[in-house]
Length: 241
Image (cartoon, rainbow, N blue to C red; front, top):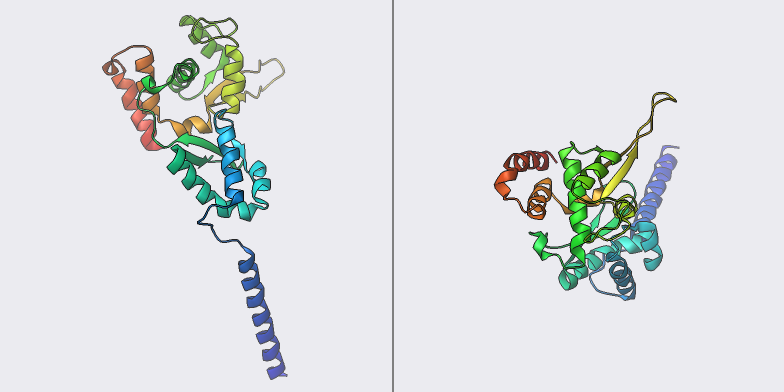
């Protein structure tokens, strides 16, 4: 009986090892060379990078066939993006499994922006700066009141920023994950529902708080020393994050 039991355990152990080995052999190893699937993934990412809308993993999987096949190719794709195009592929730090493209070299000055980029990003920097000033959360009406003080009315055309500014902030910046909208939860039926803006995951990935303060000083044509107190606060925020 004892020998039979030992033989049974040995057989179970061997079959378990075989199953494990078989499972491991089915996992694709990380690729080091470019194949057609890598080229397809690379083209998809490049085609979608300009809009700055995060790419969902579930949309990338069919390009590779399976999720393991995708993950085995992403290192090669990321290397190609960095070496050939100066683009860094970054996975957003949340449960949504989305990827964004960022410049390998961070922007040092707003003067690096093209004529087409400058209006949109200037508006973005003003929005992010004001959220920062309001302790990282600002009511939408207060944000729009601040912009109006600067002559930027979100429901009117602007000579520099263009038209549809409310849509730019509430739709485009939100979809790009530069900002996130949150609605308050009223304690009673008589309490007004309020909408707030906070920094989005892309903003946190692309910029430091110190950079936003520095960019804002350039936009407002102020000497950085005029923002020294804000810069110190921004540095402390960056260090804590």
